[in-house]
Image 1 (cartoon, rainbow, N blue to C red):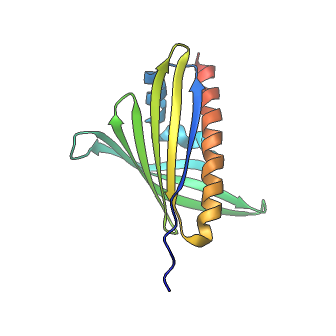
Image 2 (cartoon, helix red, strand yellow):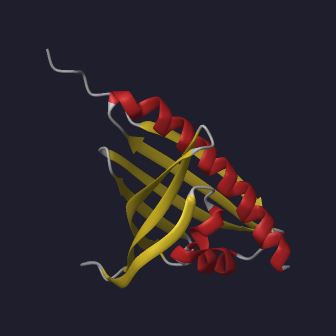
Image 3 (tube, one colour):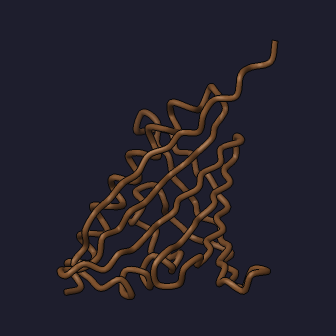
Length: 158
């Protein structure tokens, strides 16, 4: 009997940063900013910009995630990312295609506040049953790290 489809992995992370939405947006819309912003991303290659059929800015790139197992084994995982400026200055949507039939979507919404910007990231992902627990754990860890690192980076600029 075929396996029942699993509901997507889904969660939201929110942080507040000490920078204006335009500054946060500029930082997050540059693929190279994700080196170190995501603890797994060690390189960004093949950056290509353009417009989608709706006229929105699109950036396609390959990010290299580095995984370490038992501190000895290293695996570099190239992931394809399409980032779309769905609401310039306020929202970015990134769709990720990873080997192993892993798919992830991150929707980042920026909201101005009196002391900076509220950053809300909604993540949804799908993965095969064997990878599901690993993908869910990694996605949550990366999102929490990214929120803390973005907060640190924006505070350091001020």
